[in-house]
Length: 274
Length: 184
Image (spheres, rainbow over the protein chains, first blue to last red):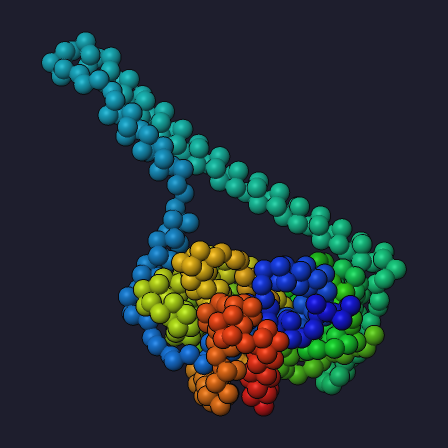
């Protein structure tokens, strides 16, 4: 399939088109999963193949499709906002009420026993319902806190492994224009594809983001995350992951629209070569 | 809060997607208006079925709504994901009809062209149609069989009665022509 190291572009393009038989596709996918360079070329091949959609005669879907979609979305959003737990309790209460025996209103004995009992039950049910809602909310908060702790622990472990590894390279970033006093530092572990970086940069307008780029030895720059709001920050350092085994030639920071771009489009503010 | 000076029309895909993640229906509506024509047309071309294509269109954008926070610009473009995912779902329906089944990976699609504005899309429509129209018939046929019919190179070779190597060469040549236009 390949030249012993990397997959031939022709094979990647056939794979991107979906034209490889299953056994060849499986073998190729297995290689790509562990090869940053081939993964990047495959992403580009997929992008080129996706352009074939522009060869098709354009047609508009019926207006009802969007209306149904938005209704579906609205229903989903309302369901998310509602807490369904009390609704289930209410339904059970309704069913229990239906199963209760019917009482002859003329019997005073039943009136004296069952009416107060029914009122008492209603009060207890209401209190339990309120308590269950409170417990569900607390549980959700605890769950979210636990997930945050697990995420933080994973981030710490990544940080330590990168800083301690002999394969990690350090790249100093220097300002490329105004203000020239900006600077940055990148720690990159090519084997794992983990990038750590810190930078001193002035604040940007609300519609802009700083974006970090890894410039590989071959191919187009790869986004290594956003700095500041919307980026993956740990303390004063940011972390990102790129495909493993990507050989880095340089790192750069550019100014992009908020949320970032697939490729650099804006002014370069920091640059460092490996 | 939307940055000053931006409208849904001028906002980037990622800024709209960030808003969708915060349950902004207007942002999802803007993304739908931006890409529904392309997605629907592609699915309809493959399936030759308006209803099935509309179903794929609606399901894809509902998926965008449900999983907006999981999209990562480092892994590829939203437009690329939409187009490849639409193609994959349509081909999967075709293959289920024919008894074949195969999952195609739709993650990691890197577009080299801007497709976020109607002007950019119109330009691409013109460019790609021109280059496809200029391809030799056998190259266009091989490419369309692969991408729009979901056929492997072996199946295309059997269908056309051509050697496998010839089919691979035709597909490669057609893709080279397409890439030249896209990079120009």
